[in-house]
Length: 468
Image 1: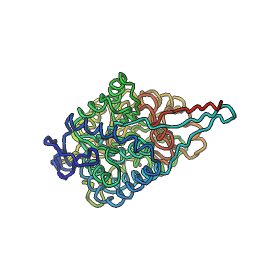
Image 2 (image 1 turned 90 degrees about the vertical axis):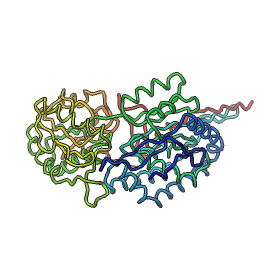
Image 3 (image 1 turned 90 degrees about the horizontal axis):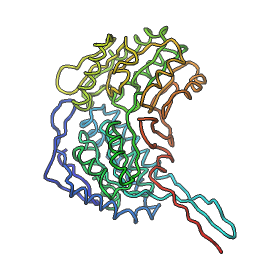
Image 4 (image 1 turned 180 degrees about the horizontal axis):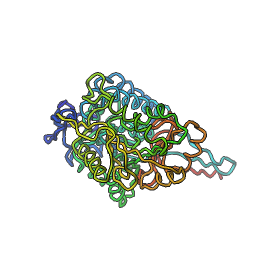
């Protein structure tokens, strides 16, 4: 894996400085990734700027290139899945699913168009409204879905006619570096440049004078810093930030059926999903029944190396997140919580933590109020539905939420009272082609997905023609 290189202006870009990348299943260093220098970043930005006009002027060429890029990912799916599992930790089945989403994104945005709108056409005046690409984009992506999140930005940006400089997380740079290599055979030089390095490289990108937009997925704290940094240059910005997604279980629910969905959507990718279920509110009368159902699933889940057959939950991606989950569980215990399941690191190498179900906590305890981003799920009792909606909304976050009920119509009506960018009923994290994804409040600015995601990489231009 040390062979992966940065892509700048359609070419391999070597660098002397490197930094280590770990396998979270073992803690061992698996690669030395290239560390981008300021000079190389300047080169990448200039390449993106130079490629812009030729790229956005030919819609057919963009469509064909994105389709070919999807074909290339499909042809290298097993290789890329192995890289994702090795650097991020998720089971191979989840890595393949991530790549499937990436392929679908590339094909979807290749087919999507934003035609000009004619708002006046008479003997005196013709007025058309166009969507133009915003320009070169700086994209900074996280470690939990290293390639899936990157392609969720790449596909609409390139489809809109933008060019891009992409920097993946320093924890998981390898799959994006490999994707950049595949892109050299498909995309014109400079359309997609992939660099890697520390968080400092992201700061350089944000403040660089060439990009006209920054697209970032990550923490609220970093998103706020980026918003401040882009302000002097009036760069456009899309921020997909954290969430503390509540699942509200109603009194009429089938517990066994709901427990399958709740567990899968709380513990998938070891809980490291921005829109995963982070806290569950359940009527007091159904509390013990739900806890028992979730505990049985937690104890049965196979935790291990994502490369091994049958693994359902892999390790946390890095020691930073491992330590945070352990800290939040310990804090909950200090505040009177009970461990219905799990609660401890798993002995041995790697960043493995037991699937944990926490009871005896309520709002005001950190594991309920904060985004844990790991395999520890608090279960909170309630007695009044109106009150629990207030409690669920009493947060700076507003990314996702779900209602679980035996009456979907009732759930849909209740969903309108939840303050989040997406509210699901009897499912969570599900999406159909064309569905937008974004957050309210501190969970983000702008959206990804669907035509709204494509529009986010464009700006309006009115063409007003006087006919005399």
